[in-house]
Length: 440
Ligand SMILES: Nc1nc2c(ncn2[C@@H]2O[C@H](COP(=O)(O)OP(=O)(O)OP(=O)(O)O)[C@@H](O)[C@H]2O)c(=O)[nH]1
Ligand SMILES: [Mg+2]
Image 1 (cartoon, rainbow, N blue to C red):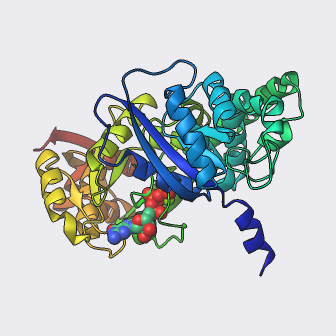
Image 2 (cartoon, rainbow, N blue to C red):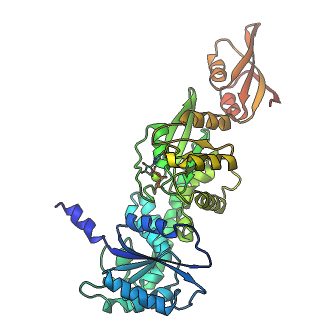
Image 3 (cartoon, rainbow, N blue to C red):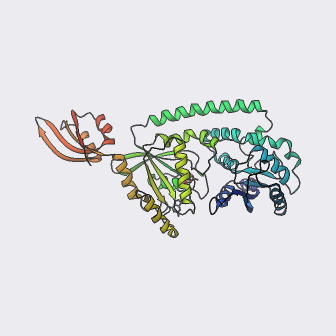
């Protein structure tokens, strides 16, 4: 057995998932997503508990009796960890851990943990470290005191154990460091990230002459697969949440003569922890500065409508509310969902159905993107010299030449061009240029 397989097994914790909800259940499968996240973090799901509550118990979130049931269930199924779909306060976690005698984490901690184990670039690592220190640190400190006594053979896991869910990233190292050091580290990280943010912004602004499209969407919707299909990139695409944490930008040629930048971004998820949104601002900057967003939607997901809603909420939160968006109905090859595709196309008539994986519908997508790229068309009259072929070539590549006459050694051209292509034309400095009128 190789070393890496061994070390992976350390992470295979046995988890019981719990979703407690007030009133009717949120979705048909609120635990499905949590299970995918838990598996993505390396856990083995050994139990799922759904609990309807009349009210939230301040001390333990679920009632004390239910917590005791969970303790028994954890012993019977030899579970290491209990993962709640709900956000819990540090005090509730402490109380639940006392009763259940196992580590307890919530959905946000689980998401942060996945991010911690996936971060590869310096920026992503810093972002995750910051988010974890801000969100997880107050919770991790609880383990110094009471959980040290909890660990036992075959039972719960000791607090400081390396590699357990919720203890990865800075967690295990920070446990011995006092609060002052942590807050100093938070300040350092913020400063360093601000520096990276500024650099990134300069980088993006430096590309401002190129049209920018950004792929956004719920995690696992197929953004990376689409980037690969459009641009021949080789970004990792996997069937698990959050395979992409870093932005990748590639050049796409949707039509001859048109080159635009396409960026892949980190996936969204409902109730994304605020700390993560904040620290991933630089990654999301690509979306903020994009000219057009392609909202990639997984039509094979049973919760497709609530996923769309969650993505729209994040987009509004990060200030992309008013940006032009094309909805891309991906995974349309999954035959089961033809009715979903039809339903979504009724709600969003402009949406484009594709299969990124099978590369179906990409021509239509290219067409729609090119329409946005061109913007509304204007009629131009301009004059150039016959020796300067660049102006004519540009108009032929990006627009439509209506008329061309020669007079006194000059070329007069009448053409149609997308408004967004005007700056490119200006750069070629025609002798005279007049924008006549917008056309329908
Ligand atoms: N059937 C089908 N599967 C697809 C299609 N597009 C992507 N997938 C699969 O969906 C899974 C997720 O794809 P990714 O491209 O990694 O999704 P992503 O949106 O980049 O996900 P994150 O980076 O994790 O947010 C992979 O297993 C893909 O093979 C498609 O058109 N049809
Ligand atoms: Mg991806």
